[in-house]
Image (cartoon, rainbow, N blue to C red; front, side):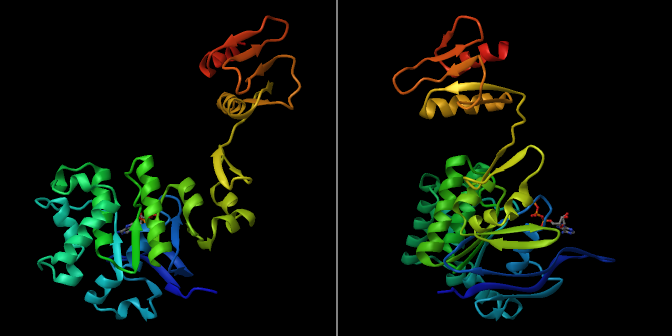
Length: 335
Ligand SMILES: Nc1ncnc2c1ncn2[C@@H]1O[C@H](COP(=O)(O)OP(=O)(O)OP(=O)(O)O)[C@@H](O)[C@H]1O
């Protein structure tokens, strides 16, 4: 069954109106975002991701066209209604000082309590749950201005969770996070979409993560937007053309990108499993193609589970046993 789109962009053009000119960033976008899905917006620096997110959250007006949310024009919503419909985390550094983490996340409840409203018992429970969910329970009493960038980012996301809106828009929510936190955050956002049927739309430069976790990708450039599942966009070649540059190669088997090697040498590699793969990976970094299919007199034995030695067999000389890949590399590069 096809879901109904929650957000619809109809002939949407985004950009900025200056005193004497109009700067058009994106033109005539027609696309939809669905509930129950995590949608990731990808595109180069300056492609217009933040501009689009600000337009979708009514923080800036479209240059032309319309945004429809939950069956109604965005421009027809009253501010109060919007605050219960859309939660947004933008990248602008928040300037609040003199607020604790708990108080700032508590502001997420303001659509329900009034801005200076006191939090009831249920509000407090929701706030503390949001703080738990982003993994910063230990920071509840800390003042915002004493936090690291990543910690502050988590607080802003907790605030939007506490707002409990059906639509959540986030501009680069993973930007300042360490790798495990990036993965955690993406998984949390996906859980909100899949488990609570929310509409989650975020921009990111974490391509590898987005390719693995997003239900839908939006690929944005000056030509417009292409939308699809990561796998469909792999199969039809869109991903490959969108991201492949000199030095970046698309691996069709995994549907992921890697640094493209330019091999200058090849060596036969024997052995098995994880050890074989790791030797192959290390040599790729030195532009050496190593594989069991290569026909060369010199060869490397990566061993198997039973041995913990890597043996380098140079052509016409005695073999050298190495305890780790670092030592092995030293011998091979020596040649
Ligand atoms: N206030 C503004 N007035 C005029 N032009 C702007 C304004 N803000 C951004 N732009 C321009 O609009 C274009 C899109 O910017 P935007 O911030 O949306 O890109 P982005 O895809 O989010 O980039 P990044 O990945 O670097 O964050 C850029 O060329 C930028 O210079």
